[in-house]
Amino acid sequence: EINLGIYAFQKSEIGIILQSIQKNNIQKEFYLTDVLEMARKFNFKTMVYTVPWDAQFMNVNSPDDLSTVIGLFRRKKINQLFESGVKIIDPESIYVDWDVKCAKDVWLFPGTVIEGQSEIRENSKIGPYTHLIHSQIGKDCRIEYSVIEDSILEDEVIVGPFTHIRMNSLIRKNARIGNFVEVKKSEIGEGTKALHHSYLGDAQLGKKVNIGAGTITCNYDGYKKHQTIIHDYVFIGSNNSLVAPVTIGEGAYTAAGSTITRDVPSQALGIGRARQVNIDKWAEKKKNRS
Image (cartoon, rainbow, N blue to C red; front, top):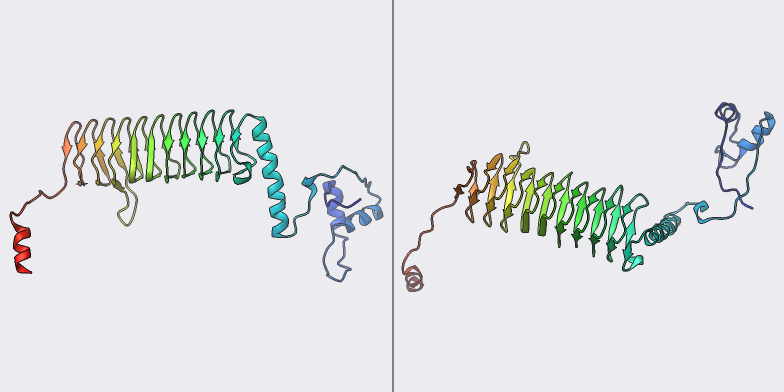
């Protein structure tokens, strides 16, 4: 038999006992084990319980011990997920926190890490190589090679590869967030698409919006953050800079390569770029100079 180091006390009694414990040892430390001897001296009732050995009683005195205990609980959590109908391709390659909830028929692919109070609903596929932190994932979502923090995805959302969603963002049903897109503290409307190389920060996007490749919201002026509002059915051209605060009206377009600094009315086309100039025979003249 060994002492597991687990004690339970009456509050009124332990207060008296702790005042009487001495540091009469080489280390000059207070030993909790001395409590039992002192309890007997005060004629307090003491009892010892014996229990079968279990891994949960392991002592953690080193990083190696901690790693061992984490591994045991990780495996226990994975077994729990299997029993609830979760599909895990390679159990040894994933980590799922104890408080994570996964519905039946969720798929977890290799390299997936899920932390905190995260929840994943039915038929969603997570990974490979995806990190979820305190986030809620709806039904029938697909997330690959991405990081999602403190955010909510509604049903049928597709994310990745290489997407970062963070700071209480909300991604509405059937939206798509693609390659190298960062979404920060924003709402992305139903059916909206941002598929390539974009930054959407402090933004409110309506439904069926198309965000062209290379578009960013310029939300920070060096002192504070500003909001970009994009209404339903807007088409944002490629390589746009939307300088907040700015609003794009319903059904409006912005031209490729534009820097938008003023509101664009509904159904209008916003253009914010220099007009192209072609100089005839310029290349021939350059060759002659060289």
